[in-house]
Length: 95
Image (cartoon, rainbow, N blue to C red; front, side, top):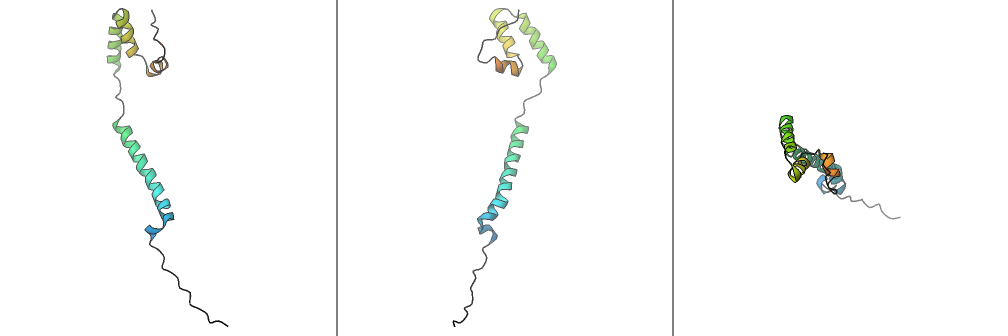
């Protein structure tokens, strides 16, 4: 019979040397960093709130114009959904 040999085990690697641990810790950290970055850009890049009195003043001034100047001024004052839908087609002024 053969004599039993002592099994030698290598010491466990440090936690930062285990690739699986980087997935467990790293993926959520990347998600948190991405969400904080998105929140930063959303807060700092927010569009200003429009003043209704300024809009009405500009709208009346645009209606006082004639011809192509009136069409151009009214096109600049269109709501975003109308301007987006008319981007490829000409603006037809309502007379």
